[in-house]
Image (tube, rainbow, N blue to C red; front, side):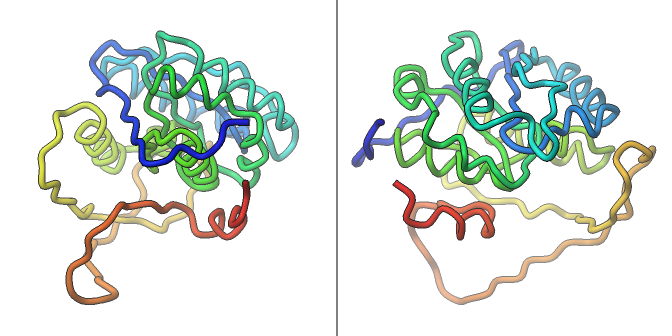
Length: 229
């Protein structure tokens, strides 16, 4: 097992039009329980000029997960080892992505750094990869959950995706708070239009200025991996 990487930060190359983006299912089998949203998400990303590479667990299901831990890890490892893949994003989150941490090919990521992105319990993978390799990872959109949404939210999501992963960095970076948000629940397979939206505002729970390295993610997941090797 690869030990902790000290004081070394790895960064993947920026994405370019035509690059290959792979997707994997480390937890819930969204490609199975939300096929319409899955197809909508694929078309959206492909229409933006990228090529999608499916992980081998696409359209596979083992009840609440896509497969057992070893199979889920191997799906990710195959994409990590594929030199043509420039970015790997999760299809959705779930509850058990942390189970694959011991089986990830961290050495392959060090040799061939690439963008790794997801949200929810994929937090465990993002932080584990960062700890073991020093690779900067991205807590961000998931393929089915995020890019299967309807406009205008899907467009705002992609604009942020493009700014961070495709465009030259603008320093200092000024984060743009999304102008709208929603907490509407609509069954994904019956949804045919955008959700009801609310105006968004800043709420700063503190005062002063802060400086440091931003490391975070899903808080429920963080509480479940404290002290892991």
